[in-house]
Each structure stands twice: as structure tokens, then as C-alpha cells.
Length: 198
Ligand SMILES: [Fe+2]
Image 1 (cartoon, rainbow, N blue to C red):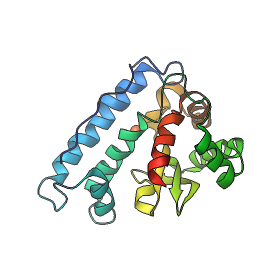
Image 2 (cartoon, protein in one colour):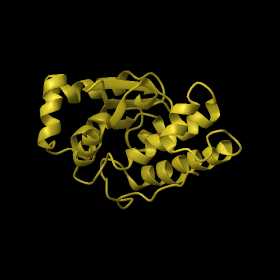
Image 3 (tube, rainbow, N blue to C red):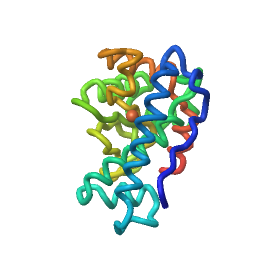
Image 4 (cartoon, rainbow, N blue to C red):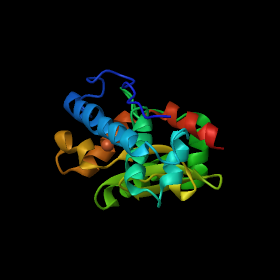
């Protein structure tokens, strides 16, 4: 398969004031497009041609850094657009909420730990909720990595590369993470990924 840039699942203005049109234009049209273009160029002629995106990500990790970085970021961003929605951050679907409370203490504790993981990811990367060995865990990864390459299944991720927040929040990464959790997260999509992961 080759990589294709997906359309955003909402308009460029849909996430204001928490994420602006300008951010989405740069982030989706320029940054994600670059991962797709570079990934396709680096995929050509490798053993990974014809594999699924997940197989390319896990297979190239530690073996082909250029391909991995671009394929990993393509995978992360494919989900990232769906991890947000207008008027997001509301109630968590029941079964998922129950599991969060069971594994992470409470919804409030989960939000705190998730934000803290993003704040403490040094430099570019992502913070996550993932399913590992049947449990929901909080993780953080550098650059284009994801829980996929650490034996876990990502169900929610927040992009803490500066390109995701610098236009709207400048250096205030904690404010961006708080807005993401409180006003942007599409918990129905998280629940859908959770149900597939268990
Ligand atoms: Fe990004």
C-alpha cells in the first residue's frame, strides 16, 4: 500500500478556539502531507511495500529510521484527527469509563496523569492512553514512536510536537494539553479503539 493524506473529519474552523484554522492548515496540509510524501518515497523498493500501515510501523522500527519516522507519524496523525471533535472532552462512554477507573484510579487521575505525561515528554513526541496486557496505561513516546512499537495498542494520543500548539499556545504546552483533554477529545472514537483492543 502507499500512504494517502486523509481529509480532516471536520472543517478547519471546527475546533476553534482550542485549535485554530491556521494550526490545522499547517499541521494537516503541510506536516502530515510531508510524512505521507516522504514515507511513500522511502517505502519504494523496501520489503515493506504491500504491507499494512501497522506492519510497516512495527517492522521498520529499529531497522529503517527514515521510513519508521514518517510511517509512524502518518499512523499517529491518521488517528490524531479522529481523537478530536468539536465540543469534545465530554462524558466518557460507560464501559470505557469503568475500565479507566479500575486501572487508573479515577477519570480525574487519568486526565492528570495523561497531561503530566505530555508535559514531561522532553522535546517532540506524544502522550498516550494505551491497552497493554489487558490494562489501560498512560505512556509517552519521543518523535514518531507510539505504543504500537512497545507492545501496546494506542487508544488516545496527543501530539506534543511544537507544530501542534505553538501557533495557538506559544510555549504553553500544559495549557494546550488541558484544552485537548477538556474540550477536544472524541471519547466515542477512543471507546471504539478500546473495544477493538480488548
Ligand atoms: Fe503533528
